[in-house]
Length: 320
Image: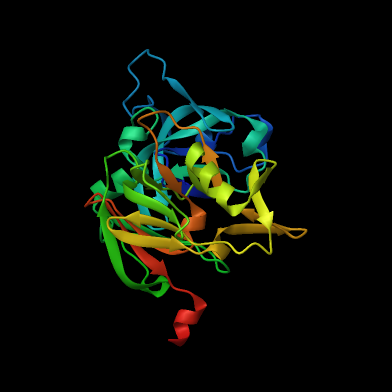
């Protein structure tokens, strides 16, 4: 919610970005008008700020910002207002969009994006929503955690974890830097068929649906699976026996079973939750999106700059 009075938005909680972005009332693109839009005229405390969060100088013009995504673009102005996630509230900067490309934003069910990564990747450099909540002292602990269920609604917990959603202890691994929620990656294995060690980091990204890796490595994996590419997705016949894909992180094997790599079934063909992208030298990492996060309950430890992994509780665990 933004305001007072509060204006409510549905957002994707994205650990791979650092900005809060919502459609603005003065955005007339199709992607905006079919979603909830922020109207600064209805807020008693909204004001324009520069995109680094600083005050606009007397007589000066506030700057604007354009953010390019993989398949689209958003341009907007930077605002400050009261921002609430549940009962936790803090004044902060956000982007009120002036224009959004129809692809992909017009097709989204949610209104905006709330980035949960660090300030260093916040476009404009303003303090992030999570950073302000931590500084305000409202959170019981400086952590948040995600549950993504197969057949149950997902859940984000701020200031703690939800023990009912995981089993066993957390495996903690320190981050590689203060930009992304990325940890050292020792190896990627496809059963005993293949081991890849060229890429040394993996980012856990709640804003990415699939498991994404450097294109040459993903092509090598899907080649062993006998997958073909259709409309940008890798597919196999559904009678294919899929091996387990394992990520070794902090000395521990985190496995995703073959059946859990399947994200859709169409006419006897199984669509895999694997995708390869070209990555520049020095910027290569695996991106562990929702396909991975459904199998592992992830604790994002802001205060200690580390990630904690525990196995997501399955229905069968309730009978043990």
